[in-house]
Image (cartoon, rainbow, N blue to C red; front, side):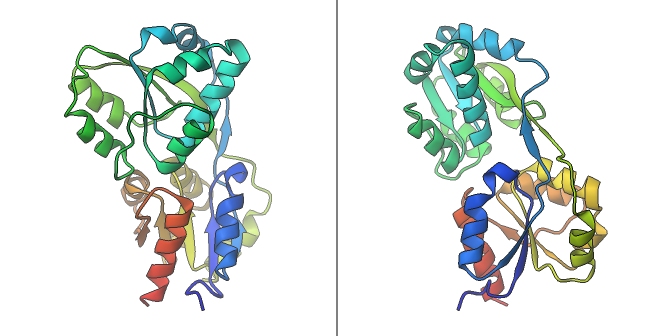
Length: 257
């Protein structure tokens, strides 16, 4: 029997990304409460992104650190300059995260490098062995994306153009009381977070007190840091940045108790 049998898991992932994670958890016997704390929407302006797409030949490579960045950038290419997809495929493409790499490969965009451990820091470490000084790279990202990777690349004398291709906002919540009551009654065993934004939005909506007796599971180091910076205690960090790995790590956590 799975260690998740009879456990209740809150999933805070964006609604359009929830299906596979919910299925994995339910297959292991967990009860899932969907509570999306972020929604992916278009940036306030496409101007910088559109300019980068038109001038894509000027870049030596492109960095993607999320599945959302890939999907939104490719959608924008299709909308304004479909021929740019072939140009993108001819650039050197770098990915952070297994899902990020998979979306690029599925779109026919070959990936030159993905770090063995799926984090921006490990990608910088791998690139420090290469000659990227003076080269120009594009960095499509969230409007509130962290500066760790682009700043680290600049420290290697690379030229980095950051462009917003999406932003995350708090979606409208219609059933807050049910989730709040379940947390207050200690009927939730674990809350999952997939991004720093999801942590911040959850706390803005629900506060932190409701998590005092609930295990917190996160997808990776940056989300863990966001949670601890906001005063939360993280119990579970996925070994790889995938839904499958997070579910496995949650299982191991409860199996050891």
